[in-house]
Length: 273
Image (cartoon, rainbow, N blue to C red; front, side):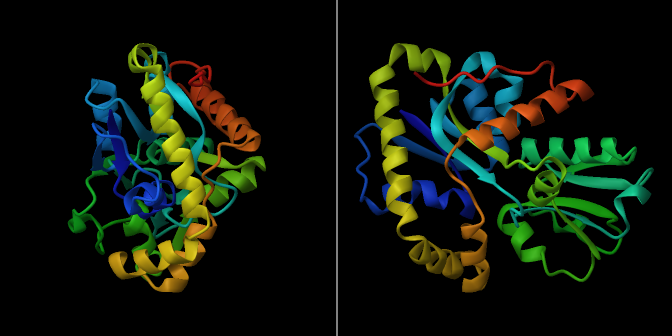
């Protein structure tokens, strides 16, 4: 089985048990690492069998996927790592360039929905994380995700910082789901037992990790270069269980996107049986 693994701190609490060997991986399982958008593309192309993907990727291609139950990356309030930085209030961004990271389809789509809802019509540009040329004094507004967002959170260059998870919670009262674990439909039909083994391994790894969050925070503190307090606070604010409230929030998000034409239709949620 070819399994996608996002190269961000926010997926560590799902994969940590597998990384440590506390949850055994079967022979023949291959883990492929990359940004969410890269994993979206690989799963869509059939180059992965199972992967964490942007929730909006599922909305676009739901006919090809099943959702693995009880797994997500979500937040019931501030997420801290999906941040929209701006030099001016959102309502004043019409006509200005707004830079959106290519790395997260869900976050890009949520920013567009927020700005359209406020009647703002900026000029959208996209960039790849690492292109620091865009984070300078000429940049009016920029969306950052993951570790890069955490590092730039304290930047004095942008006086306005919008946490997308916090905005959604304030607007709807519901949690937000940024990512799901999905399996390709044909793989689920052809190899249901193999898929179930991967799913149970991910669930077991999540349980193992949940009891070692302080250990994960220390590890990430050393690897990412953030303070231990930042890592601990960040991890504590994330949800990894796809609970009823998360499902309700995701359904609402998909329906709002469909109303704005940002997805073709409201996708049914199809779970791996």
